[in-house]
Image: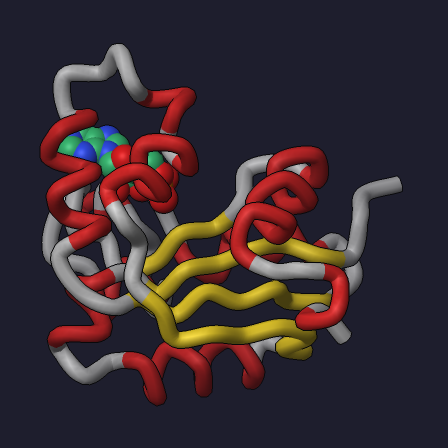
Length: 139
Ligand code: CMP
Protein backbone atom coordinates (compact mmCIF):
# COMPACT_ATOMS: atom_id res chain seq x y z
CA UNK A 1 0.00 0.00 0.00
CA UNK A 2 1.28 3.49 -0.76
CA UNK A 3 1.92 6.03 1.96
CA UNK A 4 -0.22 8.95 3.00
CA UNK A 5 2.33 11.78 3.01
CA UNK A 6 4.16 13.74 0.36
CA UNK A 7 6.46 16.75 0.29
CA UNK A 8 5.99 19.90 -1.80
CA UNK A 9 7.65 23.23 -2.47
CA UNK A 10 6.02 26.27 -4.03
CA UNK A 11 9.05 27.41 -6.06
CA UNK A 12 10.49 30.95 -6.39
CA UNK A 13 8.71 31.67 -9.71
CA UNK A 14 5.26 31.05 -8.21
CA UNK A 15 6.09 32.91 -4.98
CA UNK A 16 7.35 35.93 -6.99
CA UNK A 17 4.18 35.90 -9.10
CA UNK A 18 1.95 35.99 -6.00
CA UNK A 19 0.47 32.51 -6.44
CA UNK A 20 1.03 31.10 -2.92
CA UNK A 21 -2.59 31.54 -1.85
CA UNK A 22 -4.11 30.18 -5.07
CA UNK A 23 -1.83 27.12 -5.03
CA UNK A 24 -2.54 26.36 -1.36
CA UNK A 25 -6.27 26.66 -2.15
CA UNK A 26 -5.94 24.08 -4.95
CA UNK A 27 -4.00 21.75 -2.64
CA UNK A 28 -6.51 21.88 0.22
CA UNK A 29 -9.52 21.76 -2.15
CA UNK A 30 -8.09 18.50 -3.53
CA UNK A 31 -8.28 16.98 -0.04
CA UNK A 32 -4.69 17.37 1.17
CA UNK A 33 -4.15 18.35 4.81
CA UNK A 34 -1.10 20.53 5.54
CA UNK A 35 0.83 18.83 8.38
CA UNK A 36 3.97 21.02 8.17
CA UNK A 37 4.71 24.30 6.38
CA UNK A 38 7.40 27.02 6.24
CA UNK A 39 8.31 30.10 4.20
CA UNK A 40 12.05 29.93 3.66
CA UNK A 41 14.89 30.37 1.17
CA UNK A 42 17.33 27.67 0.08
CA UNK A 43 21.07 28.34 0.24
CA UNK A 44 23.18 27.12 -2.69
CA UNK A 45 24.40 24.26 -0.52
CA UNK A 46 20.80 23.32 0.37
CA UNK A 47 19.74 23.27 -3.29
CA UNK A 48 22.82 21.29 -4.37
CA UNK A 49 22.07 18.70 -1.69
CA UNK A 50 18.32 18.56 -2.28
CA UNK A 51 18.82 18.08 -6.04
CA UNK A 52 22.01 15.95 -5.80
CA UNK A 53 20.35 13.26 -7.93
CA UNK A 54 20.39 15.74 -10.86
CA UNK A 55 24.00 16.92 -10.43
CA UNK A 56 25.23 15.43 -13.71
CA UNK A 57 22.34 16.92 -15.72
CA UNK A 58 23.08 19.86 -18.04
CA UNK A 59 20.43 21.97 -16.30
CA UNK A 60 21.82 21.48 -12.77
CA UNK A 61 23.45 24.94 -12.50
CA UNK A 62 20.31 26.62 -13.82
CA UNK A 63 18.20 24.61 -11.35
CA UNK A 64 20.35 25.68 -8.38
CA UNK A 65 20.31 29.35 -9.53
CA UNK A 66 16.54 29.25 -9.89
CA UNK A 67 15.73 27.48 -6.63
CA UNK A 68 17.93 29.86 -4.59
CA UNK A 69 16.90 33.16 -6.17
CA UNK A 70 14.02 33.87 -3.78
CA UNK A 71 11.79 32.44 -1.06
CA UNK A 72 9.87 29.19 -1.34
CA UNK A 73 7.08 27.56 0.65
CA UNK A 74 7.93 24.03 1.81
CA UNK A 75 5.17 21.77 3.10
CA UNK A 76 4.31 18.21 4.07
CA UNK A 77 0.88 17.09 2.87
CA UNK A 78 -1.32 14.25 4.06
CA UNK A 79 -3.94 12.31 2.10
CA UNK A 80 -4.51 8.68 1.12
CA UNK A 81 -2.25 7.81 -1.84
CA UNK A 82 -0.53 11.20 -1.35
CA UNK A 83 2.48 10.91 -3.71
CA UNK A 84 0.53 9.76 -6.75
CA UNK A 85 -2.52 11.98 -6.16
CA UNK A 86 -0.32 15.04 -5.68
CA UNK A 87 1.60 14.38 -8.88
CA UNK A 88 -1.73 14.16 -10.70
CA UNK A 89 -2.79 17.49 -9.14
CA UNK A 90 0.41 19.30 -10.18
CA UNK A 91 0.64 17.86 -13.71
CA UNK A 92 3.61 17.05 -15.95
CA UNK A 93 7.08 18.55 -15.25
CA UNK A 94 6.81 20.49 -18.51
CA UNK A 95 3.78 22.81 -18.25
CA UNK A 96 3.31 22.56 -22.03
CA UNK A 97 2.46 18.88 -21.45
CA UNK A 98 0.48 19.36 -18.21
CA UNK A 99 -3.24 18.49 -18.18
CA UNK A 100 -5.84 21.26 -18.06
CA UNK A 101 -6.63 22.42 -14.52
CA UNK A 102 -3.36 21.18 -13.03
CA UNK A 103 -1.25 23.52 -10.92
CA UNK A 104 1.59 23.57 -13.45
CA UNK A 105 -0.80 24.19 -16.36
CA UNK A 106 -2.20 27.17 -14.46
CA UNK A 107 0.93 28.64 -12.88
CA UNK A 108 4.17 27.26 -14.37
CA UNK A 109 6.22 29.20 -16.92
CA UNK A 110 8.55 26.53 -18.31
CA UNK A 111 10.06 23.09 -17.67
CA UNK A 112 12.68 24.74 -15.42
CA UNK A 113 10.42 27.29 -13.70
CA UNK A 114 7.56 24.92 -13.03
CA UNK A 115 5.91 26.46 -9.95
CA UNK A 116 5.79 23.43 -7.65
CA UNK A 117 7.68 20.34 -6.58
CA UNK A 118 6.08 17.02 -5.67
CA UNK A 119 7.93 13.96 -4.35
CA UNK A 120 8.16 11.07 -6.81
CA UNK A 121 8.03 8.18 -4.28
CA UNK A 122 7.16 7.48 -0.66
CA UNK A 123 10.85 7.01 0.09
CA UNK A 124 11.76 10.41 -1.39
CA UNK A 125 8.79 12.05 0.35
CA UNK A 126 10.24 10.94 3.70
CA UNK A 127 13.80 12.04 2.77
CA UNK A 128 12.67 15.42 1.42
CA UNK A 129 10.38 16.09 4.41
CA UNK A 130 13.23 15.33 6.82
CA UNK A 131 15.52 17.64 4.80
CA UNK A 132 13.23 20.62 5.52
CA UNK A 133 11.51 19.80 8.82
CA UNK A 134 12.46 18.47 12.23
CA UNK A 135 10.14 15.95 13.90
CA UNK A 136 8.72 18.72 16.11
CA UNK A 137 7.61 20.74 13.06
CA UNK A 138 5.48 17.98 11.50
CA UNK A 139 1.99 17.43 12.96
P1 CMP B 1 11.11 18.87 -10.19
O1 CMP B 1 10.59 17.66 -10.89
O2 CMP B 1 10.37 19.43 -9.06
O3 CMP B 1 12.61 18.56 -9.72
C1 CMP B 1 13.66 18.54 -10.68
C2 CMP B 1 13.62 19.85 -11.40
O4 CMP B 1 14.60 20.02 -12.40
C3 CMP B 1 12.31 19.96 -12.17
O5 CMP B 1 11.25 20.04 -11.26
C4 CMP B 1 12.58 21.20 -12.97
O6 CMP B 1 12.46 22.38 -12.20
C5 CMP B 1 14.07 20.99 -13.31
N1 CMP B 1 14.19 20.47 -14.67
C6 CMP B 1 13.83 19.25 -15.12
N2 CMP B 1 14.11 19.14 -16.44
C7 CMP B 1 14.65 20.30 -16.82
C8 CMP B 1 15.14 20.82 -18.06
N3 CMP B 1 15.13 20.07 -19.16
N4 CMP B 1 15.64 22.06 -18.09
C9 CMP B 1 15.66 22.81 -16.95
N5 CMP B 1 15.19 22.39 -15.74
C10 CMP B 1 14.70 21.16 -15.68
